[in-house]
Structure formats: structure tokens, C-alpha cells
Image (cartoon, rainbow, N blue to C red; front, side, top):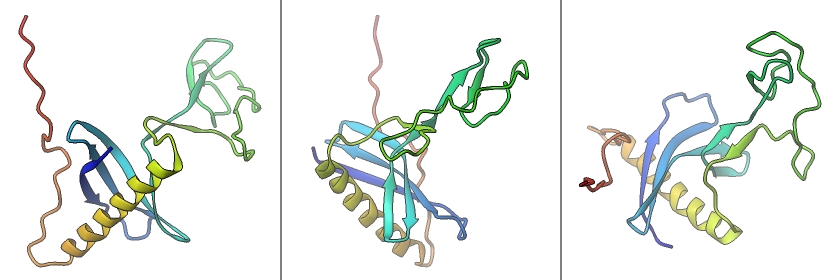
Amino acid sequence: MQISEVRVKLIENKDDRLKAFCSVTMDNEFVVRDIKIIEGTNGYFVAMPSRKMSDHCDKCGGKNHLRAKFCNNCGAALAEDRVRKDVKGRMKLHADIAHPINADCRKKIQEKVVAAFKEELDRSRQPGYKPVDMDEPDDEIPEVVT
């Protein structure tokens, strides 16, 4: 796998640990969007796109976030022990949408993304800087003929 492009969109909030969002194109064929660049205690790291985990109320079947104490639909009390824990005993509240399968792949992605982030940060300090447009079409979808 070759990382053929990394697009970085810097975040304005200077007080937050979230520093940027990016998209990574692999082999000029596959894009993963909404990768986060976060400033940690040991430097920048990459967080893969994820979604909040939810479950359903036993009483009405309504969908609720795992931290909810009461059902959003019917107001019934929800069990507090319904959150699964990961191997380290932490509550599993999010699930990755896309992620590397092994440490070597994660390292390769993280190194490329962090390098692109630092380059974009340097560019942002230059006069006349224009941020990357993450919504700009970067892929061609062939028209389907029926």
C-alpha cells in the first residue's frame, strides 16, 4: 500500500487537543476521510474515524447513546452495566469505521499524516495562506449507463 495523498484541514480552536482533520488516499484508489490529528503528551498522533456506539431500550426499542441514563424515546431508566469494556477495562463508547490491521500499517499512516500536518502548519504561517478545501471533489465516479 502506498499513501498517494494526504489532505490536512487545520482546526482554529487553539485550546483544544484536536489540531486537524485529514483525508488519506491510498494507491490513488481509496480514500479514508475524517482522520483526526490530536496533540497528546508525547506529541501528535492519529485517531481513525469512528462512530458513537449505541444500544436500544428494552422497553420501547428506542436508540440511545451508551452513556445515557434514560431512554431518549420513552424516558425509561437504562441499565448502567450495558457498556462493554475493552481489554484494558475501559468503556468502549466508540467503534472505528476504518483502521489499520497491524502496527506497521498504523505507523506508516501516522508518520505520513503527521508530516503532512506539520507541512500544512508551516504553510499556514505564510502570507496569503489558503486552507485546503476538504469538500473539493478529489475522486472521479464513473457515470453508470443502464
